[in-house]
Length: 267
Image (spheres, rainbow, N blue to C red):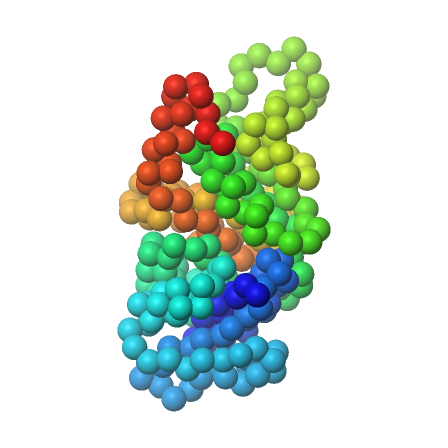
C-alpha cells in the first residue's frame, strides 16, 4: 500500500495539512502517516492525527532533513506540508516548505493556511501548461500514473503576447482546434482545456475561483532562485487551494528541450 506523508507542525496550519493529506491519499489510493518533528516544544499535533485515525510519529532532529529522511524510509508517494504557519506568514513559503520542495525526489503538496474545508476526495484538478515539451510532458507523465479513481483534469493554457495566434479565420472554431491539438500533443488524459489570454497568475486565480478547483498541479526544476519559476512562486504565495509540485531533474528538462528543438519530441 502506498503512503502519503503528512508533515504536521504545532500551528493552526496542521489541520488543513492533514485534511489535504487524507484527500490526496484517496486520490492516489494510499494511506496517510502523520509525523511531527519536535523543536523546542512539547506540544504536538498527535491528538489531531488520532481523531482521524492516522498513525503518528514523533521525531527529533533537524526538521528539513528529518522529514526528507522519513519520506525516503516510508517510500512515500507524496509529502504534504504547510506553506507557512499563518495567513500572514512568510511568502511565498516558509523555510521548511522551500527546503523540502527544493530537495524532495517525490511529489510535494503544499497547503496554504487559507485552505479551509479541503474537499475529500479531490475531484477537480487544474494543470497549467505552457505548451512546451520541457514544461508539459513531465506533468502528464508524473501525474497520470499516480491517480486512482475518477477525477476531472482541467488543463489551463494561457497565451502571452508572444504566443497568441496572429491570424484566426474563424476564432471560435480555430481556438477549439488549437485546444484539441494541444491536448492530443501534451495531455490526452485531460478532461478539457481552457484557453485564455493575459497574465498567467491572473487567469489561474480566476479559473480556480470560477471552476472551484481542488488542487493545482505543476512540474518544476526545483529552482526557485530570483527570476525562476515565476508561476510557482506566485502560487506558493497567493493560491488558496493546495498545490502539488512534481519534481523534474535538469537532465530530463534538457532532453525534452533538445528534442523539441530538433523537432523530434520526447514521449
